[in-house]
Image (cartoon, rainbow, N blue to C red; front, side):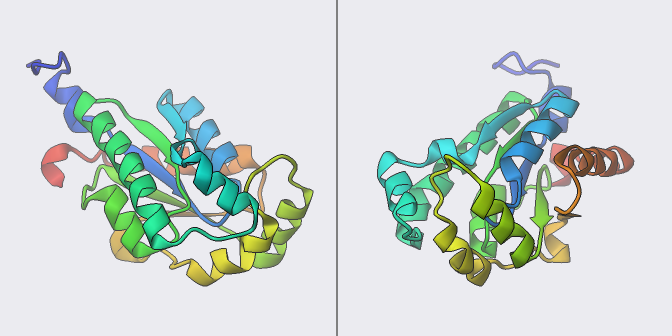
Length: 188
């Protein structure tokens, strides 16, 4: 059966979105793009939903507060919802450091899955020190780790360490997804 939007019920029911999350410097954008490529899914970097003012604030070394984050998270959540409604699977990058932020993004849907890129502070600090041209100031790393609430088992995260090359991390995520039964919209 096909809906009014031209999407088959089967496609809409099986669409899912991965939220690749973690602190700045954990490799979210690189890994998420690789996952999307391997799965043939739509990819978007959540940074593209930031306003120029918020990018400038972070570049200057100032963390966003919850008031700053609210419209940004809402825009990402809307993107996720549109993908699911259109029957299009996707991968989005978002730090999603707090449970409250992740709840906004997932809206309780089992078709929105977290991929948490887990790394220790020393490894991430080294990566940030070597990174060129990114707006996120390395001075914000301490605040990122202070804010981080590691996803709990009830959030069904795929947790992957970041010490391996991005390709290996993406392969692990894709393999874990393939080993699990598909989630349908009726299972929400």
